Image (cartoon, rainbow, N blue to C red; front, top):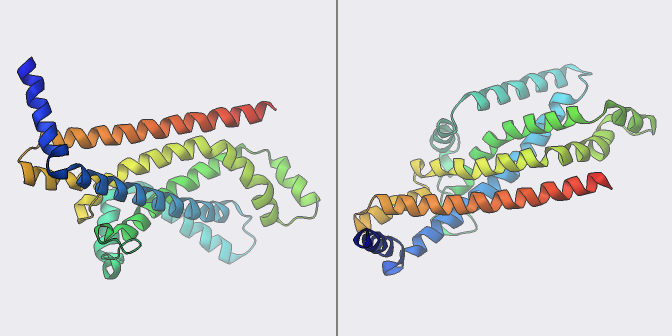
Length: 243
């Protein structure tokens, strides 16, 4: 047993500490976090826009067409794998800018493109989450806003959306946690994310299982940390509801 743990420690030392290997993991972690945060922002913006298009009263043909486009977008994105969307976005749609880096950092090449692709994917799910939150808001809120002289959009943005966001935040946080894990496929197109580091470490140290275990532990720590933040937010929301 002692020899087993000694061997594990030696493998861990060579794959994480020796020759400053931990710096590679930190770079991959940085890129993963940047990608996930940017994708979440893009997804939230897209989700809000798509939600507005889908719930706004269809008073003219333009809104009807936009609604059909929004429905098609949600159907396609939710019906195809995210890795396929990444390949199409990275090598076809955004091929001309796939070498773009984030704030001039060379190791972040391709991250802006991947963030947009992941954001487009997340936007479809965000829109469904927000639509569910809006449906949970009493329709009388909209009528009350309109009776005060506010337009539909003003009532939606000032009254309905804040209440729907409040009820949808826990589910949206789940989507962000899922998004963090989904970014692990970015390495398939050559982006230096956390999963991609495994290839470099394995090539350098001829170790396969230990880099994978280290990366799994890092992802687990991130997710557990986010879950604690989610629980804190949920407690605060529940406390505010009781006031």
